[in-house]
Image 1: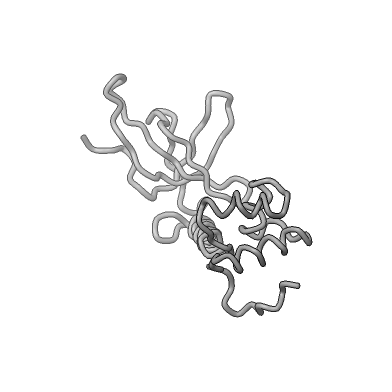
Image 2: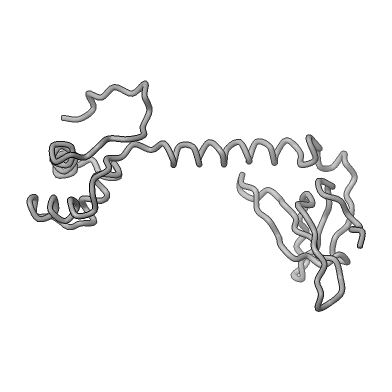
Length: 159
């Protein structure tokens, strides 16, 4: 079965409440219950790319290319949002943390008289109190390893 709209085409969809969304066809599928084509449409909302899924073909209208700028099928707004997403993902993966064995978290919590949650937040650098710095120092002394982070960043941030 051939799709009415192709991936990357600029479209306008009208939701049941009358709201109009301009976006780009992400992909399509055939609904075996209704025997109709359904489309997934990417659109921008608050600077992020969102996807409306399973939009019936009769609610989708083709939009002039001048109204939605095109670039590699998705438009510059999609590419910049994708770049932002990839950058955030990279930052999340490379975020600085201290890795210890599972049982060490409980031992550190017992030694310093705090909760396992506080130890976890401290080792992930989500806390920076005096206790958190003590937890990180003790974790490294007990065999923990510092991973991730910005290699250009000075190591002298700890007190």
